[in-house]
Length: 104
Image 1 (cartoon, rainbow, N blue to C red):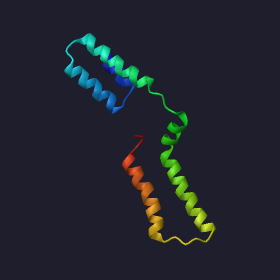
Image 2 (cartoon, rainbow, N blue to C red):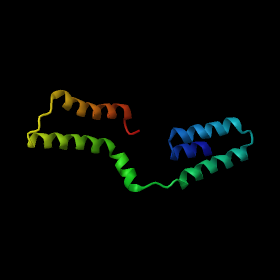
Image 3 (tube, rainbow, N blue to C red):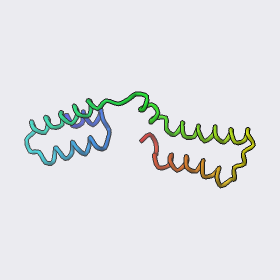
Image 4 (cartoon, rainbow, N blue to C red):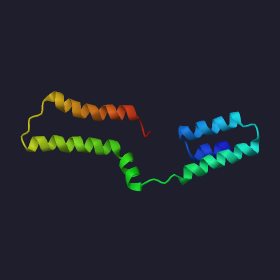
């Protein structure tokens, strides 16, 4: 019951794996609950910077924006870029998006 509640709140693989290991290795149910609570307290006490979190969440949009702005800059300033270089720039964004997947 408590495991399902915790998994419902946090879906991260690390938390899930830690809870699974605790449940498999610790036979005492009270000790399990205490250890799970300690894991969750440690997770909650981890402070993050909201600006960095926002930049991280907008990573793909910022990356493609920088590439598009750079492309427009080169066009407006008559800077010659070969198709290979342009393909590399947009390909890097595509590769990052493919590797990152949907919202992970």
